Image (cartoon, rainbow over all chains, first blue to last red):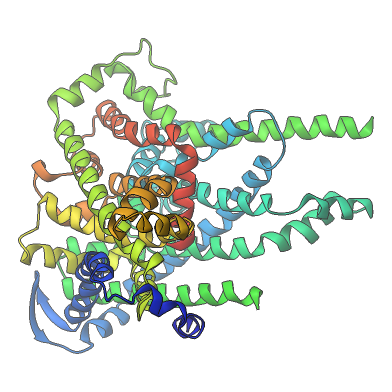
Length: 303
Length: 279
C-alpha cells in the first residue's frame, strides 16, 4: 500500500538519486537482509517443517501432516495452559494500567525532586526478568522471606504465597506488574505532556471540577496511547517465559504454566521438538492476530 | 485560603504517593543488597533482620573467588560488546540505505523487517537451536552474537532511519561537491550528526543482550560459554541455595545496567521508548 503511494509521488526524484546504478545500496542492505533471513525467516520455515513431522530429538522422522496440531488441541492440559496465559495476561493488564497511569499523573504534577522521583520510579525497567524473579523469589521465600513473615504477622496463619496455586499466580502477576509498569508509565507521561494546558484552563473557567477535567480532557487525549500500551503489554505478557520460568517454574502443580512456558518445556525439557514447534507457531499466529488488531486500532482514530 | 490549603494537602498526598512508589520500586533490590552484605548466620534469620549487623563483603568474596561468576561475567561482557558492534555496523548501513537511496521494494523491505520483529522469540527458539547445531555454532560465542545482532537489527534500522532522515541532505551534497565520496560523506557527516540516535541504539542492544535469558539458555551448554543470566538461574536451580552468595552475584550482575541507567537515563528512556513503540 505505502509502496504504491511512494511510487506515485516520487518518480521525478527517483531517477536523480540512482542515475548511476550503484552497488552501494545493495552492499548496505545485504548484510542486514542476510542476517534477518538466516535468523528470523528461515527459522520460521524450519518451525513449520518441524511441526509437520514426527521428531526424535532434533531429528525429523516421517511426515505426519497436522497430527502434532491435532494432538495439541485435544490435550486438555494445553487448554489449561491457555487459560493460565489468559489469566496471567488479563490480570496483569488490569493492575498495570491503573498503576502506571497513576504514576504518570503523579509525575506530571509540578513538584520538588520530580526528576529524582521519576528516575527511581522507573528503575525496575532495567532489571532483567531473571534478576527480577530472583530478587522477588527471595522476598517471597516461603521459609525466610520478609513478605511471608509480614503476612504471617497480619493474618496469623503461615502464608507462603508461592506454595499455593492461586497464591503463586497472584504473586506472579504482582511481580510482572512490578517489572513492566515503567514503560507504560513513561508512555502515559509522554501523552499527558502533549495535552495543551489551555484546554484545562478553558474548562476550569466553565466551572468544571477535577473529575470532569480528567473524564472529558485527559481520558480522550490519552486513549491512543492507552491502545498502544494495551497491545504492547498483551504481546509481552502472552509471550513471557523467563520471569515465570525462574520465579515459579510453572508450578505449583502447573498452576502458573502459560502457553509460552509450555513451548519451552516441551522443547527443552521433553525434547518433543515437533510439538514444541507446532505450539510455537500457534503462539505466533495469536501474536499476528493481535498485531493486526493493533495496527487497525491505531489507524482508526486518524481516519 | 481554601485553595491554598487544598494545594498543600494535594502536595502532601503526592509526596506520600511518590515515596510509596519509590519504596515499592526499590524494595527487592534493597532486600537483596542487605542480604548480600549479611554475615552467614543472619541470612536465614526468621523473623528477618532488615539490616546486616555488621555489614560484610564475605559473600562477594566467596562468589567472586569460588564460583564461576567471573567467567559468566566475562562471557556476558564479550558477547554484549561483540553483538553491539555487529548489530550497529549492519544496522547503520541498512538504515542509511533506507533513508537516502530510492529503489524498488524499499518500503516492502522496511515492512518485512518490522514483521520479523513481531515473531515471538520463544516460537523460533527450537529452529535456532537446530540451526546452530547444524552450522557448528552451538555453544559458541559466534552463535550467540549472530542471533543477538540479528534480532536487534530490524528495530535498530527503524530507529536509525529516522535519525538519518533528519540530517539535512544539503550537508551531504555540499560535501560531495567538495569531492567527498558518498561513503565518506556518510561516515564523516551523517554518522556524527546522528550521535543521539546511535547512542539510543547502542543502549537498546546492550540492555537486550545483557538481560536476555532465553537465547543463552537455548544455545549454550558449557560453563565456559555460559552467560550471566543463565548462570544466576542455574545457581538457584541447584539444590541448597546460598542466598548470601546468590544475592551478591545478582548485585554484581546489576552493576553495568544500573550504571548505564543512571549515567544515560535520558538516552535510555528514548531508546527503550522507541523500542516499545516500534517493536
